[in-house]
Length: 389
Ligand SMILES: Nc1ncnc2c1ncn2[C@@H]1O[C@H](COP(=O)(O)OP(=O)(O)OP(=O)(O)O)[C@@H](O)[C@H]1O
Ligand SMILES: [Mg+2]
Image 1 (cartoon, rainbow, N blue to C red):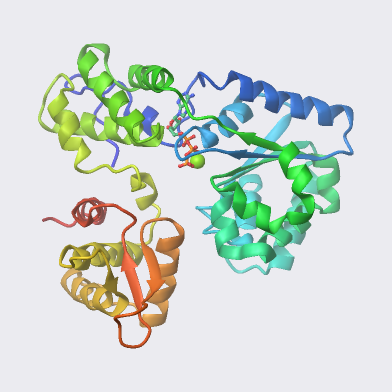
Image 2: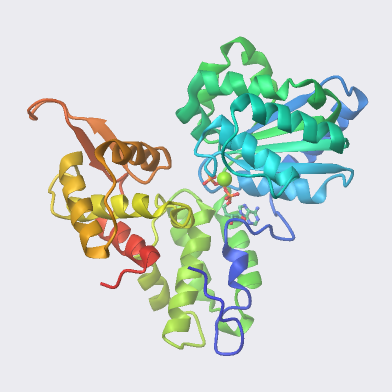
């Protein structure tokens, strides 16, 4: 939820500048990496036959996505950027192709095409369009987890389409765990090393400077206290510099300040906000889940609240899920569909799932939360589903 109350009476100047999709006017401390990206493209301009790819890796929230989007927004204007996020595609190649085609042809229907038809449509669209293309594939981990080596090979085959020869200039991938790729692309190890940009984490001073810069875009100057920003920076550095956490924390604190009609952000707003934000819980991603995925996640959190060891069997979670569906007036989904949704939630990092070992009769699937308190997940999902306490 993003507060849109931006007029007088709000601490915000523009809350949308704290959302993950927002591209700020500067990307401080990444000048070197931007320069390196520019150099790669300059290289390939001299030798158009040599299509280049780059892998950007680094810890969570260190600005991988920002770097790609900022580069695209500020680089040569004679090329079109095609941006696809593997999370949005749930790691599936056909959905990824759909997204690429839709960014070229916005009205293109979402469903109903085979992989072959999608490839042909893409080739045809690119052929008619001409021009140069910068392709960004964000969060490649999800694609590798979901579609494995076959998915990776399929993607490489698509990028070898004849029409890409004359249009595609550079593909930039972002990936959190580069070792995933090492296993897939073992034949091209040397090439991967050449093309790897390992983003260094920000220092404590840099984290603080970025937070101040982003806060100055989001909040009215009079609403900001020094101690508030110092504390946000302190908390962000203490968890390894995940700036996505800092942005969400500031957004929540601002919303709370507005709710309590305060004209200044205080430490108390921050402490309250902290109860609903967690570095491992991707609040913005929650909005991309389907209704039944959210109910299943809520059921997992509620079941786990009653469990002492942070694990619950899928059948216990399913029971809670059916109960919730009854209360909310929705028709529950069947076991197979739910199992599919469990895998999706796990792929997106909301839950963990594994097969039971010793101490359980037979094999059963055990669900958990990746180090996030169940009560936090419960309250965020309830808020998203608009369920009152
Ligand atoms: N140098 C910077 N200047 C300004 N804002 C930044 C900078 N680096 C990161 N941010 C902001 O911090 C947040 C997290 O960055 P981003 O989403 O790009 O990280 P990421 O590495 O892609 O994270 P993830 O691993 O979760 O995909 C975003 O809101 C981004 O705009
Ligand atoms: Mg990212």
